[in-house]
Image (cartoon, rainbow, N blue to C red):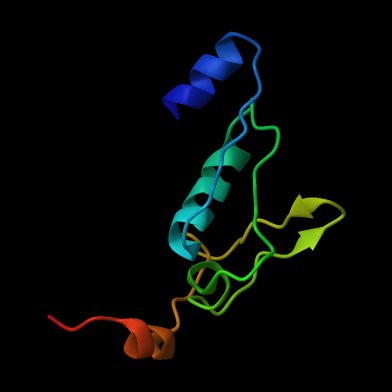
Length: 90
């Protein structure tokens, strides 16, 4: 939020780099959408199980724009079967 405010104050554009798993991507997507300086963000359409398989939903790109989930919270549902298969038990 602070970086977005600074970018806006200096009439700069905000371009988040969201190379992570689905929860961090969803949070970053919501953050980017909330910023007046928001301009562009990176989104991998390549193979990334932590982004594309970890959650039930998809982040569809329509007309060059990523659709922002409008469900409660981050708008994602973590797949329990994915966690069971790849999670570590202490």
